[in-house]
Image (cartoon, rainbow, N blue to C red; front, side, top):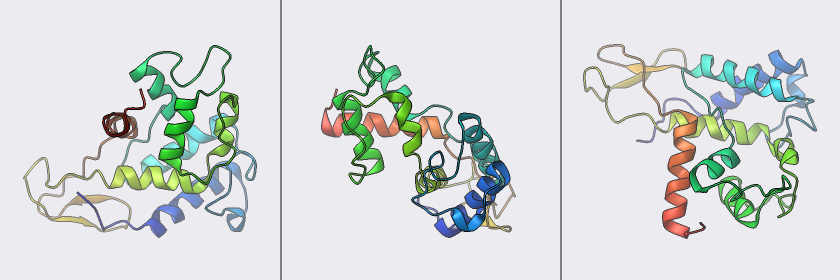
Length: 187
C-alpha cells in the first residue's frame, strides 16, 4: 500500500535532525546529494546512531546490513565481493538499479570499503520512504484501513490506535533482490 501520511519533506527534515544531533554539523550543510562520509564527516558508528534516531522518529526498523551483504547471503559468497574485497560486475549492476545510474564512481573492481562514502542523505531518506511505503493495507489488530498520524512521523490506526507495523529494512532489501533476480536474471 502506498502511504500519503508522511511526506518526503518530513522524512528529510527528521533525517537532518538526526544528522545534526549525531555529527554536530550545520543543518544548512546537509543537502540531498551530501555524502555522509565525504561531505559531513560521518564515521561507521555514526550510521548506527543516525539509523537509531530515524527508527525512533518514525517507529520503523532500518536495515542492519547493506545490500552487498544481502547479495552475498542470498546468491552466494563471491557474487558481490570477490576474494580481493572488490565489487563484481553483478554487484555494480544491482547497485545501479537500486541507487540509480548517476553514480559514475561505481565500477567493477572498486574496493568494497569505498561504498559507504557513496551513501548520501537522499539515499538514506529513500530507505526510510521505502519502509514507510510498506504500511499494510489494514491494521493487524482490528483490520481497519483508517491510518492516521497526529505528529507527522508516527502512523497509527484511526480506529484502535495500534501503531502501524512496517516491514523492516533488511526484509525489504531481500524482497527487492528477489524481485530484481526474477525480472532481470542477474544471478
